[in-house]
Amino acid sequence: MRSIRPIGVIAGIALCAVIALYSMRYLLGSQGPEFIMANLFRTPWLVIHVAGTTLALLVGSLQFLRRIRRERPVVHRWVGRIYVAGCIIGGVAGLILATGASSGPIATAGSGSLPSLGSLPPVSLGAWQCRAVLRNIAPG
Image 1 (spheres, rainbow, N blue to C red):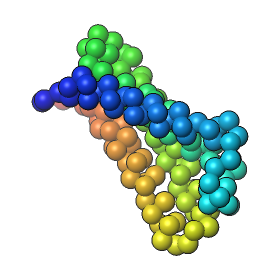
Image 2: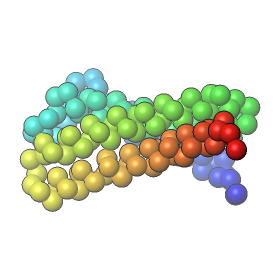
Image 3: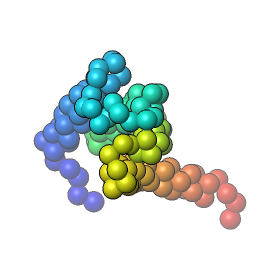
Image 4: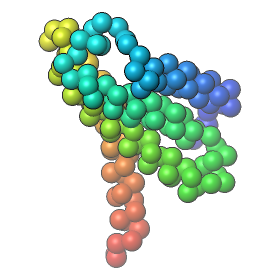
């Protein structure tokens, strides 16, 4: 398998950090665009959504650091678990937020599909790893 070049990993981590830091304004009580503030389920789900997805953005990019994978596999696994938890928490909150959107049915469907699709890979990855663990400890 071909690995990502170091400059690509650094750029990816930097982009994830910028997006996460920009999104943290909602955690600090900052007002956002009118269509976000008009969401019926904004409180408390916007903060939960931002917290989960920001966590996933910040720790998920660390999974691409080869040195952590090779020298600290326990840290790599815990970072992966935290990433999956952030994706699931952010995805569920995003789905709830989508149902409270006041932008119309098309915007609601689009806003609801993104958290669903964003939550699927971590969940399937977690299921795949559980399967691998069970396969190693199961007899025969």
